[in-house]
Length: 406
Image (tube, rainbow, N blue to C red):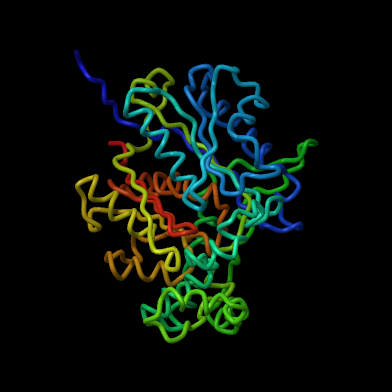
């Protein structure tokens, strides 16, 4: 008996623009369910997909309460009018949720349990703010102290302190990502994947990533005050230092300009076999060569994405130097500089079109957006191998390795 182990391929990719996560943001009036439903419609329109051929829908989402509760993936299938036979599941690995959704879809395809899976993520932080689920990791004092559940900004300043970073290099990174994001938008690099979001009357609410600030200068960022000094003084520094007794102090270096901007967005992609692509008349965009997840010390939580990337490279039988494109979630500038230094990623292949500091971080959607952006950049640049990786709360991280279609 022949064992079927097909490759999993990225066949199509769509996303919304990223809106500012505030009451005045471009997507604040749009429920996350509507963001996902719009992308389901766009996938059908752009690929000619018959939804009846989809085996599952998997969504990443970090804040699964209120507008994002009750298994949003299954709800989206139903409200989009797709066949009732299509199941749906919503997964949560915090900021790495979107990558995990795609990894789960790839695993189903590789194992022969599915031919076509829609996977991605969604987050509307303007409607469901960070920590809205009020879980014990955020609210139970014994849990918070026991595991060292510090704020992400404190964790970033911990890494910056341990690595001996200085404020100017963080600000230089913040300027660079803004400049790259603005240039990428100006050159139309994101346009093919982005589905503008419109109101019921057809009025376009948002068609671009709202956080991008063209013209950002080093002097502007250098003038910003550290963002997490007050939070540190309010007990967060003491909590971190309790778990890291080798540190005498935490130097607060990150500002609004070197921290990820919180955003609203959704992203979906079609993952399937080569045979399924042929039936649909689609050319595979990239092969999902390897996936990995990892854990890390919760106080240094944001290093987990780097650990996951190294693990994924090992599974793919590759070295960091084999990657032509790296899309790494900009969970604060110090973490980007760390992975660049330690894995040897030069500016010529690392976040070449900007990142989440400039364009926004929509927790559950970011990982999937990065995977799609990686595939797009591989196609544009002619590269062969690329990676997407994200770090998340509590020391979680996930990564994917792509091989461009030949």
